[in-house]
Picture 1: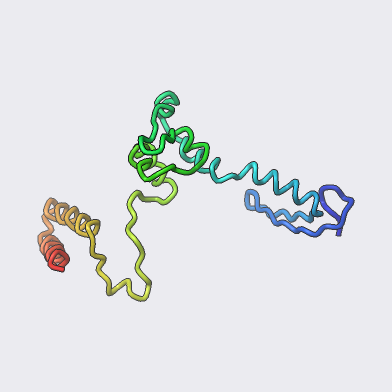
Picture 2 (picture 1 turned 60 degrees about the horizontal axis):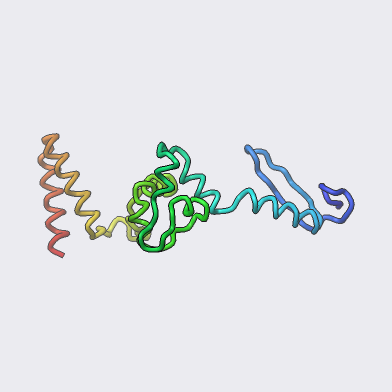
Length: 164
């Protein structure tokens, strides 16, 4: 089988691309595969991906973004968008107003809750501040909706968690 791009050399690399739900197969020689890999790497660097997510939908002007600099490592928000990496732990606080929407886009949430094995999911009550906070919010809603039985159940759950 010959290379689909140069039609000269034997194809030794076989790629399958899915674009808009259409499957395309490419059979390439070593030389054309290296060129193709270079093109793909230029198009899909992780820093560009994160930078694109970081800038999409922002209503913040570029002059404001350039001025934000981490006091710990000196990284600017603009540099973060280019590199796709934070410089230190203080960057999270420095860029918080821009990172929260970014994390929400990527993960669907801004708070890590953790995972429970499926085999234990029914038997495990997750203990922690986020669970108590959630239960208290549900308790307030139940009281506002005058669902007193539910409110009592939630109150008891909070007490049990706080005992342990």
